[in-house]
Image 1 (spheres, rainbow, N blue to C red):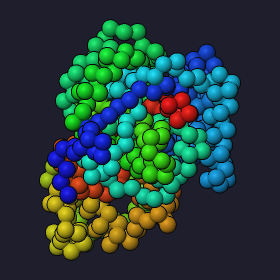
Image 2: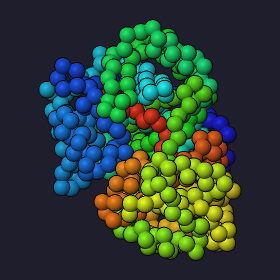
Image 3: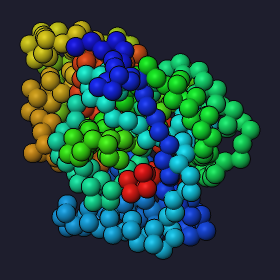
Image 4: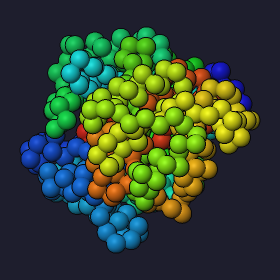
Amino acid sequence: MSTPGPHPGPDGEQGLRLTPFRGLRYVAERVGSLAAVTSPPYDVVVRPDGQRHLETADPHNVVRLILPDAETPEARHAKAARTLAAWREQGVLAADREPALYVYEQRDGDHLQRGVIGALRLTPPEDGVVLPHEDVMPGPVADRAALMRATRANLEPLLLAYRDGDATATLVERTARTRAPLLGTTTEDGVHHRLWSLTDPAEIAAIGTDLAGRQALIADGHHRWATYRRLQAAHPSGTPWDYGLVLLVDTARHPLRVRAIHRVLQHLPPDRALDTARPFFRVRALPGHTLDAALGALAGAAEHGNAFVLAGDGGFHLLDRPDPGPLDRHVPADRPPQWRRLDATVLHHLLLDHVWQIPDSPGLPDEIRYIHTADAAVEQARRHAGTAVLMHPVREPVVRELARQGVMMPRKSTSFGPKPAGGLVMRSLDLG
């Protein structure tokens, strides 16, 4: 179903409705450094190594809240709730005195991204206000819902992309240029983060007016958005569960980076993957044995059609020029041509389902791992004697157009960023 723009909700209002909240933030004097208590989003942390690294960076790292370590799911969620309560009681975390919207800046080399963090009113899909573009799996949604119930908190914001909010963007830029930030820190990946609060009712009202009638694309956080909606449905109307923590970025001012999410097939040896793929793709060994060269070859091949790089045994192989016959037989024909041509579509329906017979199933969580960086994917594949499937990113206009048509891409098809760092500002539902 096409959703060209937002439609009025039950209360007659439409568009994005961003509200201030009392941010829960680390007290700088009570932690080693603000950088040491931050974390990437929970689904980007490479486990277990990345999780251990964050846990040892500082005893109060936010990963202990978003990925608590215990024997059972129930024990994990209860542990996170106890930890959050203890940190608040000890003064490690404290709530801002006034409700605010937060201007958030990330600078990574030459790339600058600025947006606004707030509590977004949740709307049903048919209103066309927030557009998902990827399917979700029930397991992660249930896990995030149980964690949010236990902690009564939104611990990390979603990333939403919208366009042409001139008044909001102007206010964001002016704030970053002229006001002293609440905090500034540089994380170990070299990204510099700054945060400001907006508490002036006139400025907040101007943002509200500007965002009315606009829609946003979920750039990162589909499972958390589904979690917000699930928890909203489980509570009466008019509670804090009607809102969820988001970062809104105007991509007309600050275009997002779009990167691929790679796959690691832990139990598929590279030689078997290559042998079984040869009847369906042209397969070529890539010279040089360097990741940069392999990704360069992938980018060149992707301009002409579906292409993948397979790695894991020390070398790199390019798969391209798929046989049109098997594509027609195994890729569903009831979707738009743009969807049928997606690399993720071809990978999942032809290679994973038919050739390698590794379905993306909730009952087989260890068969396919989703890794956000190519070097980490190659390392994971080598460690497990498996196969890394390196992907080329999808362009944002393709993602947006499919989302407006109501067409879901295969999950983990894209990685938009920079993603907001977890731990800079959180939302406790007990604070409003």
